[in-house]
Length: 76
Figure 1 (tube, rainbow, N blue to C red):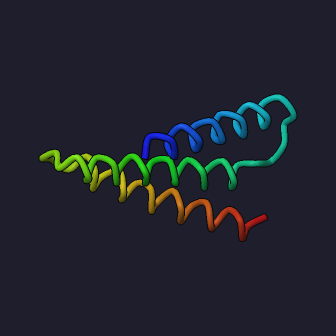
Figure 2 (cartoon, helix red, strand yellow):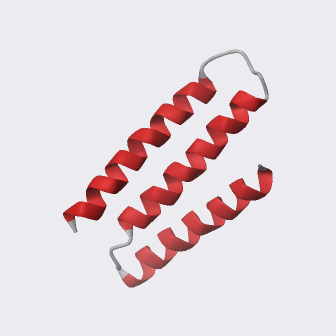
């Protein structure tokens, strides 16, 4: 799970940096991978059996980011 987090974080950083440098329109891709990163983080929190709602909140936020990402894919 830790390797997946690192890979997704690197992808998000690369996409954000490339978008800032070249002024490219990569927001839907950036948001998709950011949602995947938040989802993996939330699932990791649930696997640790921590009490609280941090894992559920992260999963809810990830699904919202996925919806926004899908909407922006169709808008372009």
